[in-house]
Length: 282
Image (cartoon, rainbow, N blue to C red; front, side, top):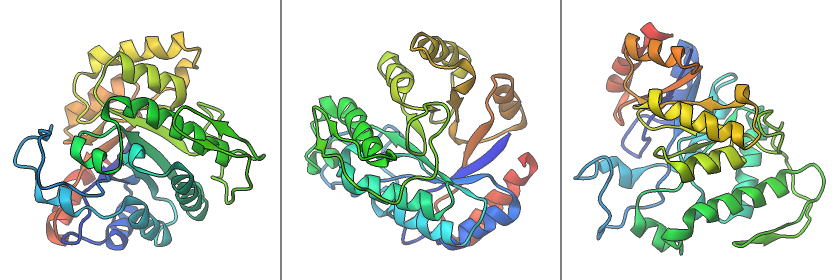
């Protein structure tokens, strides 16, 4: 089983270059970084992880810039967003950023995407909260038009792009979709709408915490197969996991091949202690 990591990198934590080198040297499979552009001080939205909201949420580094630094000092470490808030981006600019990162890293990028939880943050980006899921789906389709080998136009409900010359390209289509662009995993809570979107345009699911998979995985697999997708191609990557031998054995029994473990948003000493603790699972 591949053991990747995630961490809230901030201006007060370890640097991405130091962490990436440590992860690759120790044999970890990857580094996934979260995204928040800002956290409005006045907020009616309750934080799903509980209140008060941890300090690092409002200090998070831009994941694409940080992953670019990580890519520059490593050769094998997989790099991903966990998760990117696609609704809060201009899709043409985001397509360029992702294609550049994937190209320069040698095809090591995973596009972990989500719909967000902070209504006020999204509102500052002009996002209509109720329509954000369809907005994300349309923006991913627009980006894939720009990633296509031949100039391809996209006209959607939320945005359009002319057939264009747009380089560099991500290095390869992920085989699960056969579509241009990097491996795409959708994060979110299990449910009919999420599973329908995963089956429609993604390669798999990033379930935060990884709880309840015994019950939810059969449902997702049924939706996936009903959409005409190859049963063997579905990827499920439990995210932000606090691992134990029993938990990882359980995941392996479910056919899961990659797990993303949580690192503390802290200085080098605390991060090293966590990495030493996780070494038993490598």
